[in-house]
Length: 173
Image (tube, rainbow, N blue to C red; front, side, top):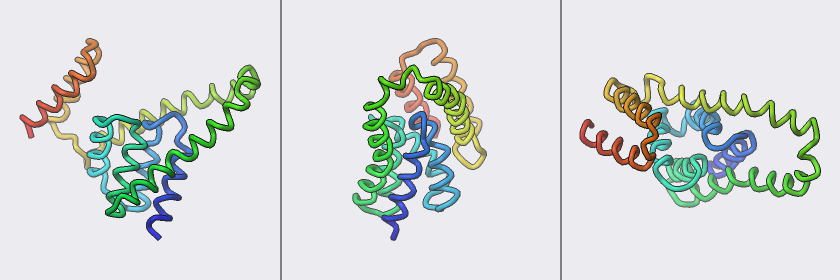
């Protein structure tokens, strides 16, 4: 039964996660933490951090990790990963057949224009989710956050920034 729930949950996340992994974070948080209670907010924050450091899209990486965590075996990882990828794959196959014909259609253009602010809102929601009091944020984390923000504005290489933040995290915590 858990495999079916996992599949349906990640299929739903895959279908409604327009805009990529960051927009899916609020859906993942709602489904996995609040509705299913499979993991805690703190665990989700850790999963997001790990998913950011590993190659690949954050939604797929987190699906793989949460699938394993929920079921305790690799089949949970496979089911969650396939389920989150299936909608995008299906939709892309359909869209590529018709996109060239419809790219100048005013309705298609309107739909895509309307989805842009929604995606930005969902990314902002995911960022705020990570800043909730019952996750990882303490005063030391705020200092790391501020320093990383400033260094990213100064165009520091993201790989170097990740390495520095990891070293500082090991030293502080």
